[in-house]
Length: 117
Length: 106
Image (cartoon, each protein chain N blue to C red):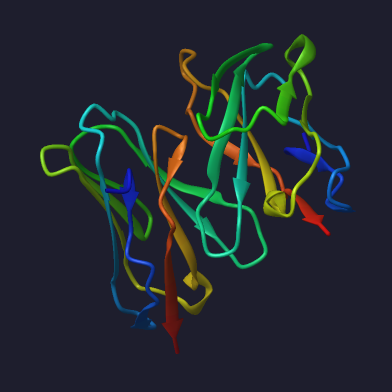
């Protein structure tokens, strides 16, 4: 198992364009989280999935953001009509949470850095 | 009031000393607490989780939780220069503090 993978690692786009990030979690992890982090700040929660179900979305999450986790495996995060304020590192984390003997630990991917010009 | 508060630092300690990192939280009903370490340009990695009041030790690290005071701390004994990083406190896996930058000097 190679850990949590995110793609692309870097994305530069022009304002108004759509971007999509992909996250491949550690296999068999039931939980998958998306966060956004800007310089000098802690990760900001965006949304999370339990298997294929999206259980929680941040109230701060604009309707330009959408996430999916089809079949409970990989996940995508799409940002429509990007704005300069969307520039950040987008982090994905997965974990085995709530099951008997699970540690509840989250493992983070290396992140996808978005720059909106 | 922020949901999770940490002193941004930097906290500077000499090599071999004990580093004490603190975190307070606002949701009294919180049940799970986590400390992450984040090196510059890297993603967070979990150091410890704690769910019950009291101390939890793992090697040079000790997490302390006091739910009545809504306070969680991380002690790093025998600090090493390689411990220099930002330490993030998280509550319920979804609410992170801004982190405390720790500098350990030789």
